[in-house]
Image 1 (cartoon, rainbow, N blue to C red):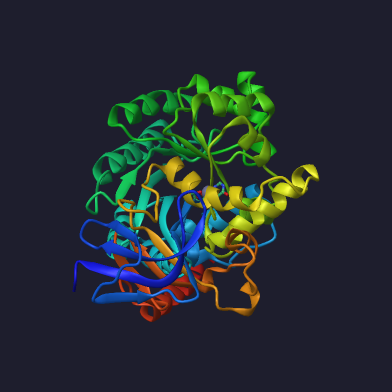
Image 2: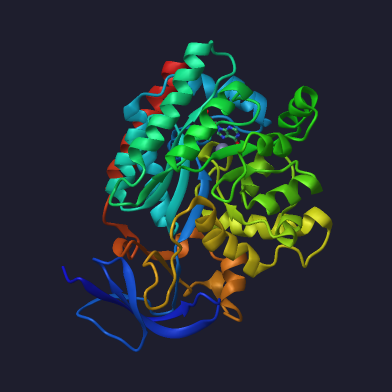
Length: 429
Ligand SMILES: CSC[C@H]1O[C@@H](n2cnc3c(O)ncnc32)[C@H](O)[C@@H]1O
Ligand SMILES: [Zn+2]
């Protein structure tokens, strides 16, 4: 296989969001774009009628939860977790998590996602599947301390820290890590005080659920007399390396705190709608200068892993939030799924320019629902679906060509995941 190949005959989305006709020459070994223009190579990927764009970055997910897709719907967060999700998760084996992860990674690649941030359990399985898939990821073991005695709580947090140290830089640097307290109400103060400084020493960021529902706000205000993000800041949990999922119920002072500290927000509009968690004030955050990325959350609260849906949902619900159709404009929503997410989780962003990281999605625009093309970015926000992605490239490697995945066996993964999911739910009954 040649070290150099050309993506030929398409249009290119440049870093300044201009679109122009050009070929793209890629250095597979370096994982970089060599040149954008009139170029050729012996090995080619056809991009006729297609847009060559940076890969999308799913900045908050629980990828192995594909096994629980459609298992429990139409409930709010707390009862959904306590009655349906946690009892089944208690039965998960490492093999389940491996195959559930593989299924999610297949879905990512098919939908043009080249990087993601995951938090779950059995991280060695998730890391191994990620390495084999060719994708980039920030991974972490989520720890929960409520309902556990001190030894069990400390062991869980310690596992989170150990995993973060062990896997940072794995897969030739494609994997980085974070420390994840599950949320500010499920990880108690004494453990945050003990483990957050250790994450800083290890040089790993924090990733946690924050202010997802009002039930995650009231207990903090009652116990500490401050809003959750003020409490998090007092504990040293807001820095420009850290990223917080959801942030639905935040007030103006908390938004200012996010802007001042540089902590990022990961907006999960589909999950927030499905669990009726609320509408996050995203335009207010953007106006305040907060970096916002996009996430699907797990497949059990979405129920797919197509980040083009989140782009559309973010733009749509962003307008509904204040009744202003100018809010969360198309380009802002698309940028959230690319550079907003990549910056938030500390992964390189794909850039279709000489020297840019070759994390690329090639989207086929030859479809009725994408005709005519007045504005490519409008279509990316409002009309493109994950199934329109034709080729997916990460770190210069072609992971999918003409919708055929090269790194994972799609049919075998689907079959094994269906079997594992059926056996899992049966065990949990
Ligand atoms: C954080 S690691 C995984 C842990 O979190 C649960 N989970 C899945 N979705 C959500 C959500 O939207 N808010 C809070 N917790 C969630 C998942 O089931 C695992 O137990
Ligand atoms: Zn989540």
